[in-house]
Length: 99
Image 1: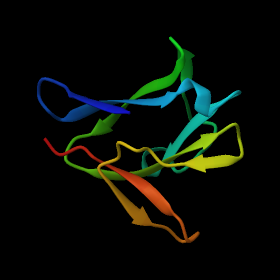
Image 2 (image 1 turned 90 degrees about the horizontal axis):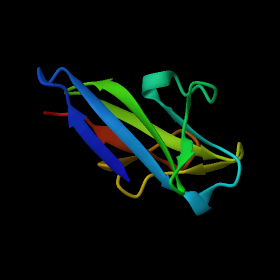
Image 3 (image 1 turned 90 degrees about the vertical axis):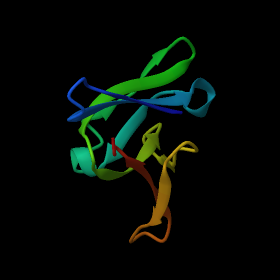
């Protein structure tokens, strides 16, 4: 699940990424264009039975991303705005922060 909330001046979009609790037993990392696909940067925290994190993204941009589940399984988000092919023969999720 993805929830978007813009700041009052609409220059930043606060995006909350949520993954169902049963999808992972140990960890969920959020990797994408916004963090250079670094698995050490953005981790979801388990709260109320689900994995969740909120990050700030520039408004009016588009970003590719995926989740790395338990350090070994790649997953897309079912609520992504779109999907695009990648160089590995799979697809990346896309989030659009247009106002």
